[in-house]
Length: 310
Length: 164
Image 1 (cartoon, each protein chain N blue to C red):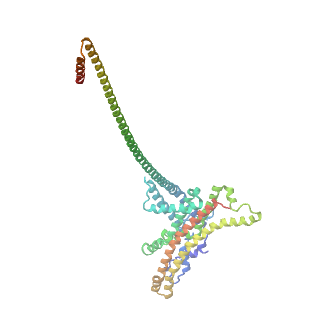
Image 2 (image 1 turned 180 degrees about the horizontal axis):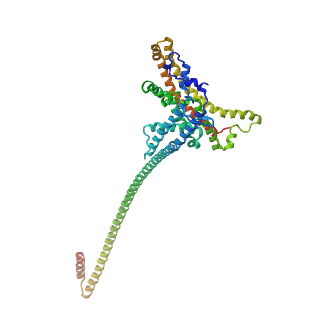
Image 3 (image 1 turned 45 degrees about the horizontal axis):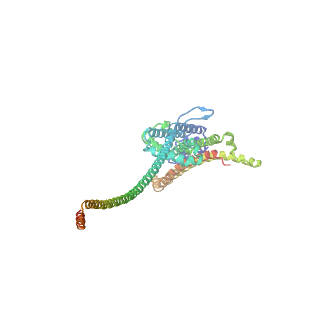
């Protein structure tokens, strides 16, 4: 792991040996724990230091928090509830999540209980996905290299390491999926009682040998669902970025092969940039769809725990 | 290990902490009040629409009622006019009949009176004739009159009768 992150990774720094695989992985994975942005001591053997992805999560959470609370407060302060500006969009999202994702799955009775969770999932994942499409750190890196010339160990320089899409990291998506996992148990327990919730896991009234088979399967299914959520989101977010980076790598590979930088620029203009633009457009859809899928599946699983039809 | 599959419990925990904090803050300060306001607005719109519908129905009902009232008034007015016209006709006929009867009664009374008067006059004449006859007779008896005289006297008498 040290090999991937401790070296200077910028392609321009190693014009003689461009390793596309290493660069791509470096650009989509988290910054290393050995170079954290903020160092924290170990807690029970767990390194809680703030890495790039933790920082991205905080940025996303802060942006959502400020924007949402400010617009909602401003909206609710009026004597007549007329949504304006950003509130229009937020209201549309809130109503969509409530009426099209939560209510059909969990039922009218539990809608108000589970809408906040699904809504937060949707907005948080959407923003965390989307922020990875905005080349903030690439622009900051250019500024640093050609204008600011900050120290190699400066906060800005360390913040440039690693990908900006926190949801491309399966540790993050696992964290989110585990919340869904417990939300499902909580929903079932609240709706049916603790014991009945676990009884609902398998259909009642079957011959006992079937239970020997069924209980492990259902328990496995319970664990597979959050695992699928984890992998689906992380893999989708990683895949698009890898595709874009791989195609952009052609610029450097061709320049290196020909020994002429204009060959690389030519390949970039003729091939890499148009394809990368197209994939980025596709990514914008994927970003939305994956946030929707994660939130919707969470609502579906919660609804299944509430209405266990066995 | 490839950093793409590097387990990172710290990041895992930070994700949970960050998300739950965000969830708690958003729920308290944004979602709960917003969802309540949206629900309230939805209820109010539904209530307003119901009210409007009810008002329209009420208006329609009133319109129908008033039309019915007007129609009934027309019918009643027509009936009143008809009955008044019939009454008038009847009254006129009655008055006409009464007047005719009265006139007939007056004529009959007049006739009766005339007959009575005539009868009385005839009686009077007859009585006077008798009285005259008696007077003449008495005069004749007191004076020794001749047959000639008697005849003259009767003639005079009849002559005077004729003058009466």
